[in-house]
Image (cartoon, rainbow, N blue to C red):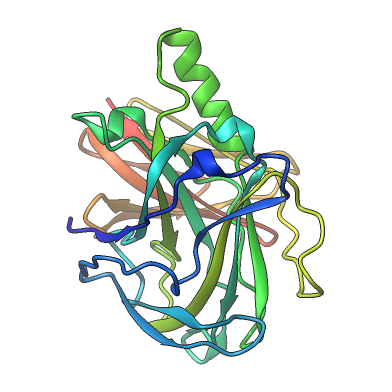
Length: 276
């Protein structure tokens, strides 16, 4: 998969981490190199308040079946344990069929210095923060709590793991969601040391985890929920093709990596599952 690649000339060593936020992309003071994919493309438009200068316009293909993404390549690596998460301004009218929808974002952090970036990847397919503004500007927050949990596991397995080596921030808008093609506007992407004071814009409250747990084994993927709800499951190949669906559990014929979308009346969760 090709990447949308934004090269940022921000040197993080110059910032004082006691500040509440560090801007990593505002689409004004940097001149990014951009590659497009079939799933996500980016353009630049004159911003409107509360955004300023230029803003990014992300166009996302219908369903985003290949979890296309926006990748920010920051100049100096960071340790995500120094931050509570990232935030960004967002605006757009998004539809699923004829109904307004709320696109979620998946977060991934990687290290470009590794020959296998996937081996260093920490990611959050659980928190699932959504843009719910329905055409109005909103600040979307993505906490690092799930990514840091994954980082702690890597450090436990390898005490020499370079925890301060993350220099790629990846946002996947609405992967495998089945939404119509849409365009959203983003600006002021920040690393946050605090969630305090966003200047009066609305704050999207995120939950730590959706109450859906997936269990796999012997070719079966089964859902468990903390509240007893029954989950509807849809399973996709890594290329985005639906391969199975069912209520509560599904049977998969082959081994490999799959994307599972689990939905109850109160929650939706998208997870990657490896069947061995």
